Image 1 (cartoon, rainbow, N blue to C red):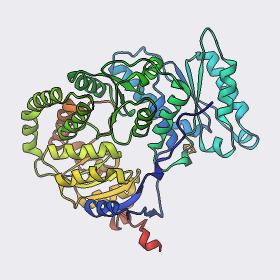
Image 2 (spheres, helix red, strand yellow):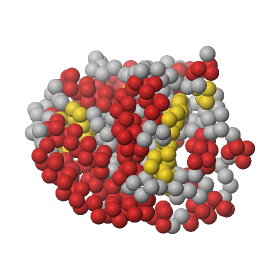
Image 3 (cartoon, protein in one colour):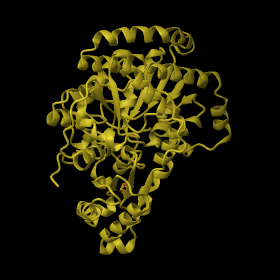
Image 4 (cartoon, helix red, strand yellow):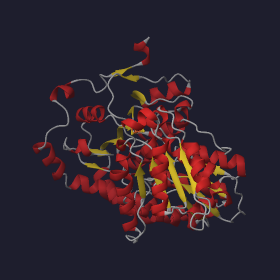
Length: 493
Ligand code: SF4
């Protein structure tokens, strides 16, 4: 089959770095002059696998089966991440009885790794199809499958021929080449998933245009409450949102080319795909920030309004929503104004959450974020206007050992991010990558503000943890520089 989108990897973006540290202003100036080089970690804890994000992007699609062609371990994240998140999502939308997701591992073993695993994959697919009769079967590659050279495209083609008109309908087989070693930027997994939807599901379909329809490409971290808030905001300016791919149906996917506009939930999700849709179908798009915090929400909505010629509607809505949240923000701000905050989040979520910190009058001390590339220069500039250019930026995909060390030294008043280890330091903390509760839009601003307030009002749980639980690392580690294992490019010369 002729692929319409070829696989791309984000590591090739201009100025890409996933290992760096420095003051925001210093890193930005280097990036602006194309001189920001990647450093090297001589010790690294695990980074997130590309396959996990391909799985996250596709696992909730209705009437599908996902085959992970790998040893068993690669599908471990399906259980604790994707399926758990989806079950909560179903509960929130009042549909506990909605069909389960089917994630099946081909469970490659020693024999397959030596003799090839295509037969095993084919048998797994056949059993899955006969048991569930889905509309789409996604076949996800893995490091092991790619290293031994299993041809998942050929298996998909064979299966498509075999299951033509199976129990009255055609089944689509969609391979995703998301082996973990493909990229150090796990957002590549999203790009590969969206490319698969185009190449193997939409293919060359050209449905008629639907007036006012806007595709909203969103990560799996969009909770049910956030979906409702996004729809509410888009409805307010006269647009109907087709939210993808989370929990979408086959029909929703096939509507993608029918939309008048494309927007993504942040600057690193779906941006590659919406550029493709612009080239192929002429659909205009905007790449903007995630709508967390009033500043970022206003900016997000204005970008869409400009695209759709709905500026007046957007300004009216922004004025009334801002007025509705103002008093509560001011009340919370009395407790938060002037506090120092540290933040850990994915790149798009991190930029937006840093503006939320500004909404509540707090100062950003440091930000851990997985990637830097030249496309983010303007985002860092905007943060510097709000927080000054001295806040520390640690480019790290995970690496909690660096983060905990640094936070113990910084002793911020509040930590926002995945707080598991930080809580043990006794620092008031809250989660921002929730995917189960409201964080977006004007409703999210208040929800997160109240969470910050709660964390400050009653920090007893974290205090107790700091007193009665073991620290994550030995005392010697905290005495060392947090970046002891970073080899800067100039040191490597
Ligand atoms: S695909 Fe590769 S990197 Fe990803 S979980 Fe499997 S072995 Fe690990």
